[in-house]
View (cartoon, helix red, strand yellow):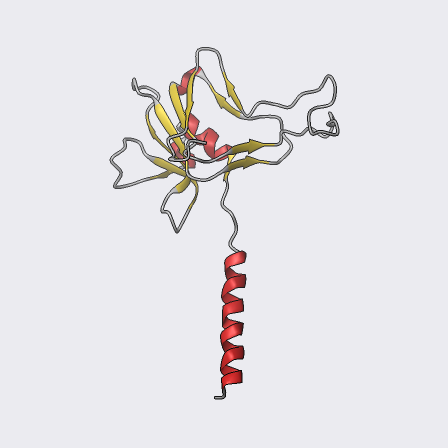
Length: 164
């Protein structure tokens, strides 16, 4: 095999590898995953065996590289410590609905750990429109990202090294 042909095969292989890496989708958990974790809805999650954390469940897809689910929660609303919800990937909501995550008194003490990730929602209502700078039109508003009900307890923190 001549050098020219080897070089073309080598370049073609390198191009194929580069293209396959660029097609890897970015993972993002859903608001439903976070809501299920906040509510302690074990039927919507996957029990995480071999965990030192009590009632440890994963929600969303499991990342093959990290081994974590998009959202994980542990603890119990009935305990003094309550439930911890930790994000392992960004959480996005882009469906145009105005509802966000709701924390109620029945959820107990909830600690939401962003863990270096973002929670983003457009909460855009096409019936309301927006002004040119992306804020709601005069007299209009967007819905909440997180809504905390009366007698509910929510702590939001970021334990990542970036502390975003």
